[in-house]
Amino acid sequence: MRIDIGPAIMETCRGDITKETVDAIVNAANETLLGGGGVDGAIHRAGGPAILEACRKLGGCATGDAKITTAGNMPAKYVIHTVGPVYHGGSRGEADQLASCYRRSLEVAADHGIKSIAFPAISCGVYGYPIPEAARIAVDTVHAFLTEHGGLDRARFVLFGEGTFTAFSKALQAKAQPRTS
Image (cartoon, rainbow, N blue to C red; front, side, top):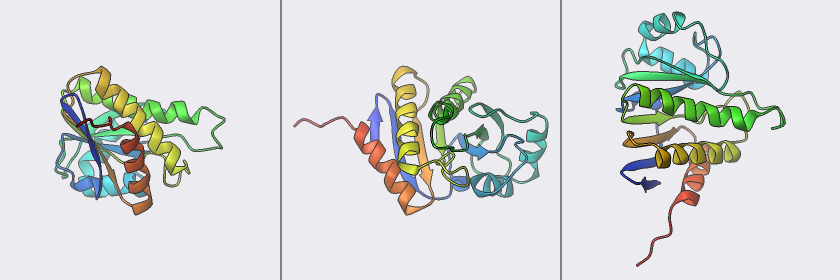
């Protein structure tokens, strides 16, 4: 699924985020930034020791914030690490924290002149965020940023499982402008 937002493109695809040829990939990290499971572990493994070395110098990252490092051995130039919320039923500000992950990642990207970025489904793995709700928050936040700010050419959601891909594609479809003939 793909939509145009002015000169920018927002799209969903199935794949392996560590193989994306974009300026930056986003890592769904933990607060230590020192590696973990899921997307975080895959990025640290694919990128090699340069990522861990750079992350050690950052002193961690708060939930909802984002920090940037090299991408090491991956095709992307940078990794933007963000810490998503653990889902506790939605009554502890999780939606605002999740939206902040996407917004802060885009702000960091803009600050570094990044033109293309790839996101995973932040907080949808072991952090337990319900995928349809997380997809809506992600798509709404990225869409709003691309609408309000210039600079980025492409924002991709690179999703591993079929259910996650379907949920993000539906959320993106809901943002598509009706076409007139």
